[in-house]
Each structure stands twice: as structure tokens, then as C-alpha cells.
Length: 424
Image (tube, rainbow, N blue to C red):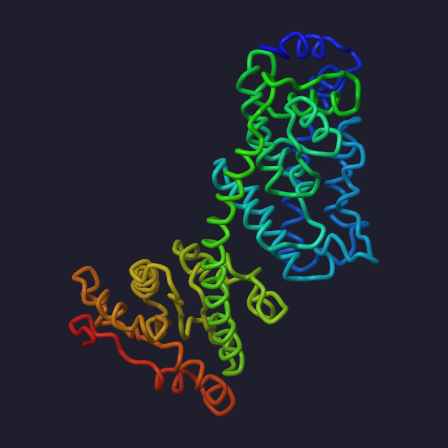
């Protein structure tokens, strides 16, 4: 164990980061406050209140509290400072990038598994947001200290010196490969270090700053090139899957946008699913101009959580009753969409005059009808559930919005779903 004595000396060093920062009582207190601060950042982005500058933003408050974490995080805010001549990091003026950054933080706030966190990192990396790189890992460290190590120039330099690697600053794939190597080191010296990556990062920081001189010989080297090659292969496969998922999300959001605009043009109040309001459609939030909250009568129903996740609802302005409900099934399971629609139809008899639409690509009509033929959906014949194809909606939505009234036009371009008949 080549570095055993080095780590022991470092832990005993009053001026080293182990004594001065890792064991610092205030360090642990900051985990909770930083989590709360990041929740505020996500909320402001979701509500389009984040603004277009770093100064005086909720993000500045969070990063400033990280930068106060003694010497190891000094300068942590540099990566997030708005540099107008370079227009980086591009999360202040580009709304789509800002929403993607907010979603990245939100996922990492909510998820627990290592796989989910790495997937979120790969997704934000795949968006290639100018100037937004692995410095974001310093935010994630305070959410998941046993999964995401912090990083900065000194930590990377220390890692390279200790392992003989050649990690470069600012590249997510190289950060992930370094993280892999740090896991190997942490496992090897676990008795002296911690499952919190802050301990190892502190050691590397002190090495990188020259407090300890090390030389990586052949016995101490990690297989950096193999780690990096494996990470890049995993990233490539992940980006393919993400590209397909992103295209599906885009199409799903676009259809919701069509239905949103059509409902407004027909004089309805419109509700967008809670988990979709923050998506970007034509440069604005999908939930822009829609109901911020469900009518009180719906909120008080025990099935309110179900209603809030229906893709699009049209509600009468006078009574606040549901006139139409739409589930968009672009590529996801048709079965689950039908279940949500039937639960809504059967669970809210006071909205018995509502119409229910499954909106799907024309190529999926046969699948939709086949699902409705299942015995589990035998009651569908008693309900006004209809199939609405993308092509009919695309071709007729503007005319219906301009000249139509009520649901007549939408019903005219849709077709009834009969649980006893399957399309040929």
C-alpha cells in the first residue's frame, strides 16, 4: 500500500484539508443549506423567475456558500460567473439551456442511485451547453458526497501526480474517468479515508497545491486510458439513447403545445401536467398562460394527484369543470395512458359530460384499439373515450381554433374507441 504513510501524515497535518476542512463542523451544516438553495434555483427556473444574470441570482447564493468552504473551494464561483463577451456559461440568456440546467439539478436533487446521477450528467453533457462543464460536480457533491467527488484545478493536478493520469479540466468524460479512478483509490485506502469523497478530494487538493510531493511510479499508476476509453464508449451509447428519448420528448411536448393553444383559442382554461409545465415549447414554458393551480373543487378530491398528471385538460371558465382530457401517447405504453384516462373518467362522475381523448401517431391506432379490446377495459364502451391521430390534429387544429366552438371540431376529427372492435 504505497500511499499509506502519506495519507496518515496528511490526516495528522493541522494545516492540511483533512483537519482544517473535512473535520470542520460547519462543513456538515452546509450540506442542508446548499440542498435548500439548489431547490430554490430549480423552482425559480421552473417559474421563469431565475433572471438572466449570475449576480444576485439564487445560484450565486448557493455557489457563494460553497466558495466559503475554506481554501479547497476558493474560486468555485468562477465557472458560473456570467462572461458576456464569451456568452458563457450559456444558462442565463438561453431559456432552453436554463431549463435543461434546472432539470439536471432537479433530477440530482430527487434521485438516489449512482446510475441515475451518472445518466443526468451524461444528458447535460450531451446538450453541449457552452461553458457549463464539470464545475457543476461541486454542486452535486453537496447532494451526493458518496457518489460525486468535487473537482477543481488543484484536485485534478493532484490526481494526475498521484496516478500518472492526464485528466484535463473542463471535460465531463475525463471527469467521469477520474471519478472511476478515485473510486479505486478510495476503496484501496478506505480504512484511512471515508465513503465521503471529500476526504480523498482534500488529499488530492493538497498534493496538487504542492503541500505534499509525490511521484507516481509503475506500481502506483491507475489504468487511466482504459477507464477513459470505457467512459467514452458508455457515453456514446448513452447519447444515442438520449437522442431518441429527446426526440420523443420533443414530439410529446409539441403535441401538448398544439392542444394547449387550441384549447385557449376555443375559450377554455387549460391545465398542463405538473411534470411538464417547465418544458420548453416555442421558446417559452409549456405551462405559460395555463392554470397555475387546479380549481378548488378538483384540488379537494382525493384523486387530485391523478388529475394533475393528465397531459392536457380543458376546463370550462364558468364552472371549472373538465370539458376534455387528453393523454398523448407518442412512444410510451398505451396501456398506462388508458388506465389514467379511465381512472379519471370513473373517479370523477361529476365531470360525466367530459370527453376523453387518446392522442397518438396514426401508425399506433391499431395498437390503441387492440389495448381497448382487453377485458380489463370492458367498461370503456360506457365512456366517451376517443382516438385522435396526430395527422388529423395537425391538419385541422388551426381551422378548428379559428372557426370552431366547443368540442365539436375535435370530436369530428377523432373516432370513437369501441372495446369490442379492433382495427383491421
